[in-house]
Length: 339
Ligand SMILES: [Ca+2]
Image (cartoon, rainbow, N blue to C red; front, side, top):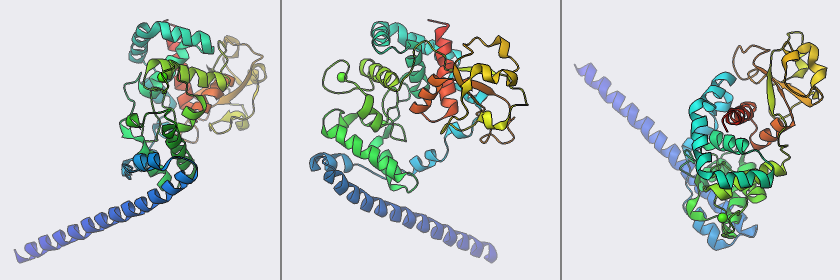
């Protein structure tokens, strides 16, 4: 009995030690974070943003440990391509997109014509990014960006994003009251990062602020972005192929960072089993991607495989994930059959 009591006491002491250790390490992170915030604030003021806005916006910034957790566990990096596509481009999604299109047809058709970007592509991007505005994210993006700036891994990138965001608030382009979005600091129906807002977002309805959670400004901004980065309307994005295993590995791209070894479609003829059935201009420039290699353990080297064209690379510009761009173009094609 005595032994049992002693053991219980020891366990309690052990739990207490662990708990106070966790508490003190959380305290250390928070105090380091606050030091970082002070340093960042003076950097922001030096860059020309008004002290009032810097103090107002940054006064609510807190360290969000879950942001670091999400950053290390992104579905783009662990789901195989078929699963990823099935989840994101199904019939339910198409139905939901069509309902939105029906409701906003006039404005979406006008934007399609003005910016030379297919409405199906705009709907697909919104569907993949936020399930048509359903998942806009509830994170305070100032805290998200501050947490990722404070974290050492990509500090420089996120610090710049946060400076740009403060600038947009300072210039009254973005309303500071609505800064809620994704854990990575992306915002609105199409999940624009601050830099994308600065470079491509438009106040389409001319009411002096850019409202990326509303149809007019968000669709026009996304269409403007796609147009400016060189999306070509009515040209293909990708086509699924069956590879011959003789293909040299140098032609198999598995990273979105740098699509290599682009050739005309006809150059790849001897490596594609279903070449004669491909409904695509054989003189187009293309590359081959095999998105599961390097990511999915024991993935088949040769499938799934896709021929991708210049439009596909434009979507990679939007988000550097081979699967993301495949999902967007797949959903776009699904809409094409319905509208
Ligand atoms: Ca507006």
